[in-house]
Length: 331
Ligand code: ADP
Ligand code: MG
Image (cartoon, rainbow, N blue to C red; front, side, top):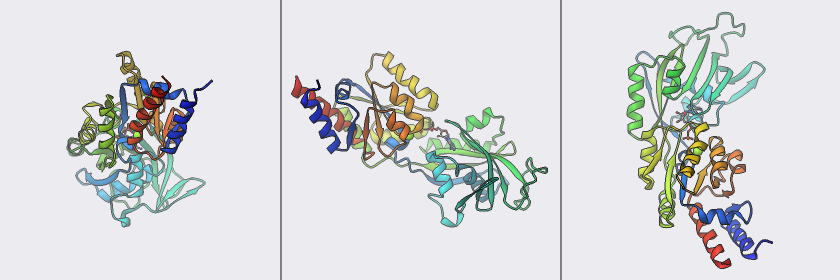
């Protein structure tokens, strides 16, 4: 039989926008000593804005952005939304509404085929102008010439190391631009076609206004906050410093996030994980306590024990206080 106090505790949680899957979860909440926080969408708003485009010599920045946006239109990643939706740049540069046809998706005058996504790496697709004909025999990349008779290009957008692994040439100008952006706390991805990186796209994701207060509350409850992200060390350090986190684990591939939680558990810690993305689901399930942002993906919510309805990190601290209080009443 469930003690009435636990039911009252979960009911009180619901009133506060903290959905607890079962009364027994209050007990796990009380035991945690470490809180691992996903960066993008959990500590930060997850609403990246495109800050600048740094083209390689001889590359037209607008064309690089147009091709990147056409591919990213198919991805849900925060990086993709900023690039495809034109957030942070004039509306005249926007790729325009997408329409789906039998042969692919048309974005403005561009058609996108054979879209592929690599978790933690980037996205790629074949892009061609709607007027270049569908026969396809002359496809295969027409070099770096003008945008007139463009033909088809395999366009990749993603992190530098992923492009390196794919054998794409990354000119020093582009590599340096990425390094500078990351040192400055921004997130940078690279757009490439025809075997060569063409531009760095610099994005910035502001931390949520309540995140610093939330981290301070978690610390005052005796919990150790850790920032976990697939993003660069620079972007991670900048966000961590802004909210008061000392421990940063960066450049973790989606598949390795759960293993990171296990490692912390192996060190004797009892770990809560707070996340929002598809790439956080396994880590949320592995943690002793999983908390999902209600503003996040369904997969993350399903993998979690608690949902923070309003996507406000302060609710994580409230959940811990609530469980401690509820269990004190019982004992
Ligand atoms: P996070 O843990 O911050 O949510 P991810 O593991 O999802 O990060 O992604 C890590 C990195 O992989 C991103 O910072 C970006 O460089 C690259 N990446 C992932 N998805 C995309 C995409 N759709 N377009 C471009 N780059 C991407
Ligand atoms: Mg996230």
